[in-house]
Amino acid sequence: MTGPLTGDDGLDRCPWAGTTSGVMRDYHDREWGHRVHGEAAYLERLTLEAFQSGLSWSTILHKREAFREVFCGFDADQVASFDQGDHDRLMSDARIVRNRLKISAAITNAAATVALREQEGLEALVRSFAPDVVPTPADTDTMATTSPASVALSKELKRRGYVFVGPTTMYALMEAIGIFDPHLLGCHRRGETSETSGSGG
Image (cartoon, rainbow, N blue to C red; front, top):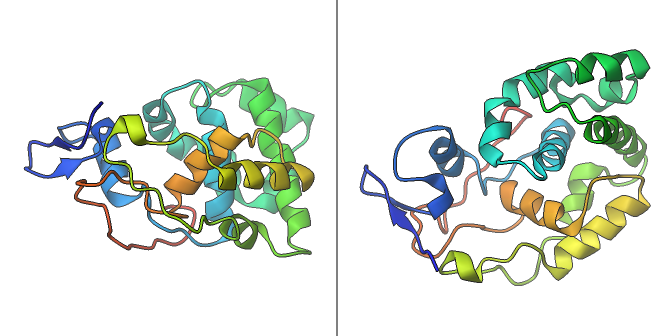
C-alpha cells in the first residue's frame, strides 16, 4: 500500500510520478487529470493509451513527439487516409512503438473518429461517460483500473468501430484527460481544476 510520496521539492504526489524531476513528474503535474479539448487531443490520448498497453508510460512519453509527427498531429482525416505504404513506413520507424496491430488500430480509430463527426463526435461521446461518483483513492491499493463507466465506454466505442479500446485502456484514458480527478487524496494536484486545449496538451 503506497500513498503519496514527498518529492525533493517538498510536494506530495502520486507515487508513480517519482520524487525527482523528470518526464513522469512533469506529466503528472502539468497534464495528467487535466481536461483536454478537441478531436485531435482526444484521438492522440486514445491512440497513445492503446500503444502503451504492455509497456511503461515513460516509454510512450519519450516517444510522444515522434508519434505526433508520424501521425500528422493526430489529424483524423490524414491518419484515416493512410495506406499500406504508410503502414510499412510506420513499421520501419524506430522512433515509435513498432507494433503492427497497434498501428492498424490507430488508422482504424482515425476512420471511426471521422465517421463519428456525423453524430456527437469523439469528445462529446467520451465525456458522456463521466461517472456520477468520483473515485477518492487514498493509496495505490485502492486505485481502480477499470469501472462500470470505462466498461460502458469501451463497449460503445467498439460499437462505433473502434478497436484496442478495452475497459482498462479506457479507464486510463478517462484518468488522463480529466473525465474525473485521478489523483490520490493527499497529492498536491488533487482537487485542482485545470484545462488544456489542442493535441499538444
